[in-house]
Length: 72
Image (cartoon, rainbow, N blue to C red):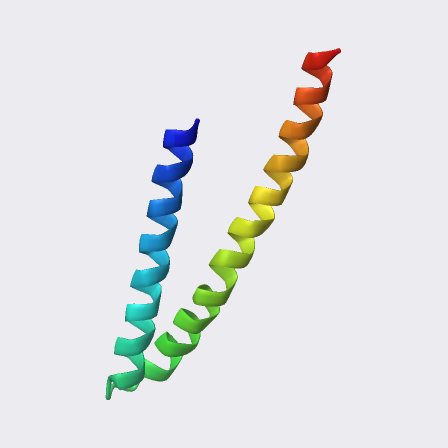
């Protein structure tokens, strides 16, 4: 399980780095769609970590309940 967590953490960090890079590129672009792309990129940069954190909290709550049931 630890190996899977490390792989997922590395994947998540890579996605965030790519999102930051996209945000920088969209901010420097001179194209009519650049403003919309920049807004979407900033939104995803904020939304993705928040969703991942929420999923992690739910997973901890659900796995904690299963661990308690197995101990009984």
